[in-house]
Image 1 (tube, rainbow, N blue to C red):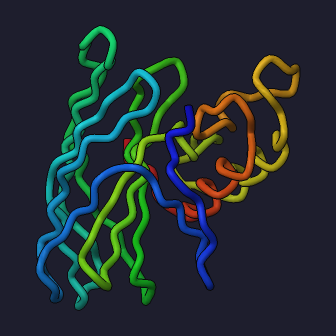
Image 2: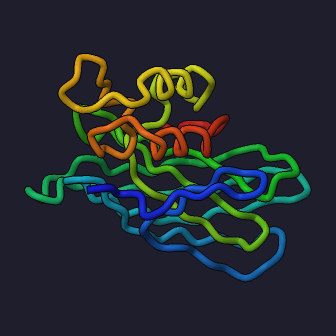
Length: 188
């Protein structure tokens, strides 16, 4: 089962559309963007809640997001943590980050995008796109995904960490995910 609903290429950015909720608040600098979403990946369900504020004077996105992750089958709590978010941003209206969820033998990440143009935020759950584990999605992660591109589960070349959507094949969806969050910080 593919957890990503659609992948499309915009005119200047690669965007990943994912099944899940979108958060909306009123317009204007300093508005609180409320985060309230439940997302799933295979047998893990995570509930995210919190608030973020963009300060256009200091160019900082600050706030906190609480994550409560459970095994969907057993109900066992896998993670209960509040992440403090503080990200400097430039002129782009889109801010991306990853919340690390050590919920299984392969790390998961809540991949989040905050759009300052319309004060909306959305997240989806995938395997951690910071494949190299350095705290930032970088060129090494892109290299791993493209180096394993085309590998299928069961083959000697298959790297489950590179199969970000867990489909059993390292494919264009995985490449799109890692490219779409290139440069994003990973909060642990």
